[in-house]
Length: 272
Picture 1 (tube, rainbow, N blue to C red):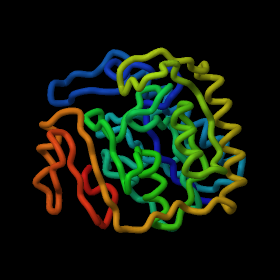
Picture 2 (cartoon, rainbow, N blue to C red):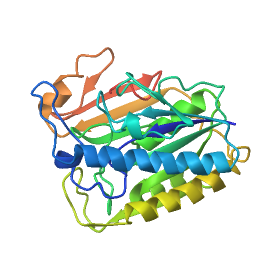
Picture 3 (cartoon, one colour):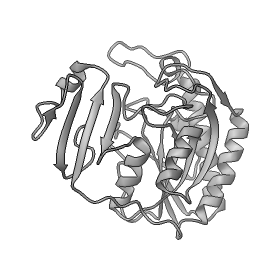
């Protein structure tokens, strides 16, 4: 069986501080102090997923580093020898995902913007306060499932924080999840540092490996997520200047200083 893995960084055990572990600025040659640590932790979680998937019957595994452009969220030197990686695609993914894959796995995912008891929750990037499709708030988990569904591929596994797992189970009730940390704040904290409980990385990898193996048994039992157009898309940004960047797109309507919508769109990512 051929498996595609979408990888992110904010949902990894031990990752709690976005500025110090998850972001960088190549234009100023600035890298956070703990980015290498976070990338190492993320790669080892992916490797645990690969071990579990192989034990469950996977024959080919391809992962996409979905955490931005180079250097991204994975360390290629630590990558499992049985896993291939999509490189150079930046955020424009999942690159290479097509109907030849049997299932989608999501690794290191986080909850959408506005999630409570979440760790580093956001929708696509920190400047979005909410992203709504047909009056429903969505985030990266939904978009990954939707994209896979376009080519008939079901999402059967997700690992990340508790908020991400709850989000995935609301979309795909029978999905296999591995929870590696949980936010403690009852109010949405976005990508700000907030209290959380995390498994030790070694224990997180054990949980992921076992869940990934179980997920392989669900590949033929879970249907792809299919959502048909048209799409009414509304985005509320955190600042008016962010709304300015998309307000002049065809069919876009400015609702207020920070909110833009497009009705009857062909795709749900029209305002990204």
